[in-house]
Length: 82
Image (cartoon, rainbow, N blue to C red; front, top):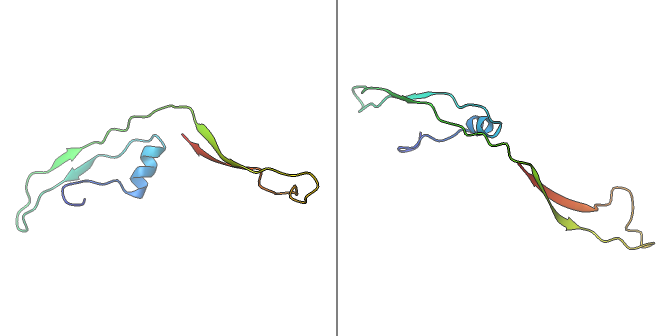
């Protein structure tokens, strides 16, 4: 809790990103002396079954017989998302 916001932890973000449910949480106000009435909430996780995507971000050109075409030479780089 920061200010008046309940924030996701790393574990909570991992749950959401895996499609799992977030647990219920309860807040209890306190003025430094007395507790107030508690309130609870269960966050909703809307799962989306979208297709994964790939984007090729760079390709390397090779020239015959110049020595650049060797085992483990990088052919391309890419980013993925889901």
